[in-house]
Image (tube, rainbow, N blue to C red; front, side):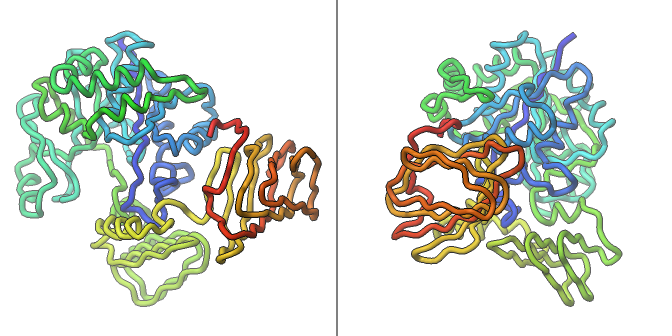
Length: 467
């Protein structure tokens, strides 16, 4: 009996969900529809299914520690392998890398179940039935895609045209409204979910046939890759040689061995704020509300407050999202166009496209409370047992005031403890390190002073996280 190797694709930034989703804290790591992130929900959905091996999670280098932390929160430490992409090259190279990695560890007849990390699936039993059908087709040598039964003339998805049996006649680009309505009426078109199943043997054979350069590059990226527990790092030069291609363009639209399994699993890719409104519980006025929100005469709107009170009056079909450093206001019907705003923010080199006010690090997090030309104030949280790198800054000095826990501080050639309601001073050019040897989080206020306060003014001498 063939086992199933899940491959969870956890790259991407989800720019249409800005300002909540940022380049360094993307959509798949957010809690949008429950008490776990989309990535955690995807792992929980498949971890206990029959014949299922522990997942391979493919993620970008910059998201490695956040991904690791979320996996550990599920109690799955040392169970799931995390494959690190040094550069983003879309889905085709990522899936190819996972297949080559699996071939070195497993039987070539193992079935890969490829799942994006940021999808919502509400009908679990129906999904399991679809997986079983896809597995049978994959064992028979097909590249299987999951087609979602459409319930509306959606223009934001690509479509799959189905023929007799499970045969795929064609993949169709995102249609206009009139075309989408025709697809819905004809009844043999399905939304392209981006979920796949195929055996390692069939997949690699078809990739070698239709995209030999991508296959050879990713084979080299595995061969030259390195284990860095709990990660496997793909070789950067090998991966950079790959074209940036989706698996649809690279393979599925070219192969003659493609099948589709139609499923009705209450699926949503949460690709926009409108999509989140569609799947979320609503109040009697049709509003989706999160956080400290007061509404008066507001209907069919999404209002999300992350840090402060948000009040709305007389809004209809409106989107309002507040974070610590940005506010988005738009008609819900224009939710897909948020990506244009993010492009402008990025072009203007504003940090708001990349970072939140709170930034997560492998040792904990920091929040910028205030920033002016010659000073910056941060709240720093260091997890129990964690330590920052031994480092130095050329242009700034730092004052640390401990407000919770006990800090073990190295400053120059001295090591000492700083307790609650105590402080210490680190001068510019002085080697220093902060450690939390305690069992509760360490919290301190850091006041930086200097002519340059950028995060790149840091020289690391020793770092347990390999940065």
